[in-house]
Length: 176
Image 1 (tube, rainbow, N blue to C red):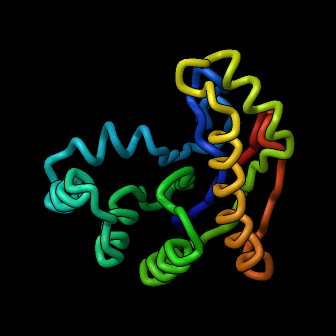
Image 2: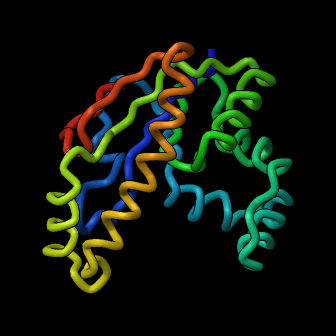
């Protein structure tokens, strides 16, 4: 069985806070799909879909919906637990993601949402550890709030369909 899990966690520099890969604990063989991995492995690859997606991104355009399905399925390894930590931005993308999984008979087993409950603490930590990037706390706070509004819309939509686990952003371990 090909199992799919989704982790929603605000992405901030590893200089500020440890990476999602450093947070996940599991005795299973996981295929962790992160934004960095997508950029390093998939988008630098020579596949036709990667080239087309890169063209859209290089032109500053949004990736059209018809490219999402092959983009997502290219990341999945059959018969493993696949953990998406990136690539699902808003409710419309999530609904398309669901359709993609259903077409392939993949099983979305849970959504883990790491909510930033202490926004001031995270923005101060960011400013302290990486001030040259995160020196404007109000802008970072707005990004966090906007991120959480989009994810909470997905959580609300999903709560009667999937197992939903909500934890604090600062959790030291995520067990899968």
